[in-house]
Length: 533
Image (spheres, rainbow, N blue to C red):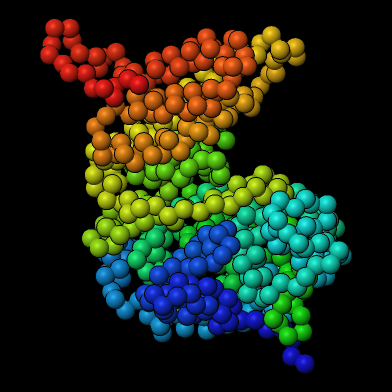
């Protein structure tokens, strides 16, 4: 009987959205038909975010936009010409690329399984189980954080097409902590390091077709003296890297987009190659990860932490609405701002008009703890926002940034004021000494903030085309949220009335315009009814 086989370049494992509906296709067809496909439709968002990166690396190869010696202007001209072409990628170039690495795109190849390490079968004394790879299934002592009817004592096989999705997610968003023991020579360990995208939020530019989307994902090389031969995706490397060797330099675009995984995986197939029945999951290298700037992440600068930890990717937060990220996407880099625009958005200003007018952003966040726990993933699709970018409409971009800043400022004041009102109201009931360090918001603050942010979002979309002072409008939303969520307390706590009155006054003061914007006495002035709540 021949060994199991599942060539991911031709087998239909990628759901895509066509004008006629959802279709399942392989990697080759994804690229040859990209101009006839609206978008990827993977139901596992972390896998979709990872696949965008892998496809972007292949797109750079087949278009020649991976040449580090191309001057920036020439690189932009080539991409613009490709974006104006209605014919999509050259099918001959697509097939030539996959033919070059044909055997390495087999999910169950006995020597070079795609994105896996066949040596784990000999180096790991015990398998991890297929459940260790699948979000939502219990594995070992791990708790279940998604609803699941699976058990660790009776793991069910995973269809091969779905196994590829979870393989992609594991390499990008995998946990740290303990995994299967792997012994290489005299070195033995079971400790994992977190995946390069764990706990992050990704911003993917999206065009009218997948063809446009992949070209918009590309960024030009801006380093010094990279050897094109040194850059390779995992399947392009002549040999599987030795786990004890220091990891290779993060080069562009192959290693940057597809070669930073710190996890090693090996799937075990059923005899027919249609299912994954077991798996190994362990460490890929004991060396620490090398620094790299992912082109689809926002990087925040925190001047209050040591210099070596001052810059880091923005963490995913399921409690944070996506509109609060718009200022970081639309404003160009500024050393005085905490958020740095994703690098993929820095070269989107020289696009064909129809492309830029229809550019949207697909957002994928995975709210996770550093080790094992996965809280929730979330996605969103922005409106056609690129015409609001600072390079195209600086006034609109500035207004959006001001509104975002005002919303965040009033949220901070709301939390502080609600916390203080809670302490003033319940101080006689509190016997324990106050806790030190960072504290959770009080009950009133939690409820007020939960009520504030939906109102703030509604106000935000009104304010970007409105001249009203943003701070006053958000202050009004904060006062309404606080009063509604604490109204019952007035009948239960004698001190609630004065405490909440002081909180409302703090919000009024925060929403008032700065003193240097007040009118000069004696001048004619008609005050805006919205200047203060």
